[in-house]
Image 1 (spheres, rainbow, N blue to C red):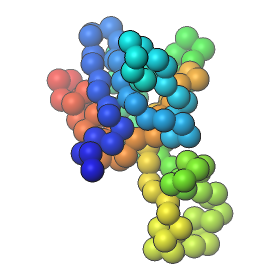
Image 2 (spheres, rainbow, N blue to C red):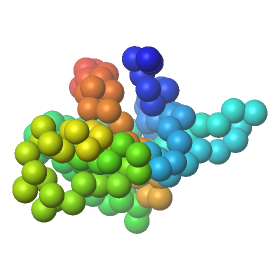
Image 3 (cartoon, one colour):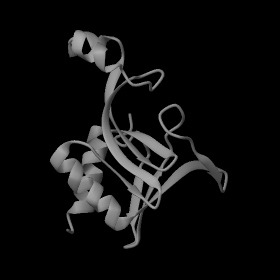
Image 4 (tube, rainbow, N blue to C red):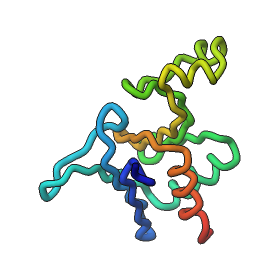
Amino acid sequence: MLSNPETLAFYDNGNHVHIFHSVKKPFSSGMANWNGKKFSDIIVPSKSFKKLCKRFCIDGSASFKINKKKLSVQKHYIFDKTAKQVPKILLKIINLNKLNKQKTSYRIRLSYGSQWVYLWETTWEYLINNILKDN
């Protein structure tokens, strides 16, 4: 089992944060071919991404627009096979132990414009800690 199942890598060049991943649909908006390999590169302005991370640490979610593109990060319970979000009414009715038996998981959805990816919470926390440690 991979310790980084999203095959996530990120790089902040000072102007933009590049988030590389190899998460397949339906757990992402998809990947592109590059040099015979499939990956996705979500490119977000550095200042905006850092602002998003800080706001997430305070509120547990964050969302705002940058140049007509929506940048957001939200917590979701999703079904493991389909990546569809578990309806909120179902979360209220069923306790989490029963819900987990239905093969669901708690994920973080990071999106910018039309690109998005579901991350494990531990991966997201690692990303936030590394982005914010220098600020």
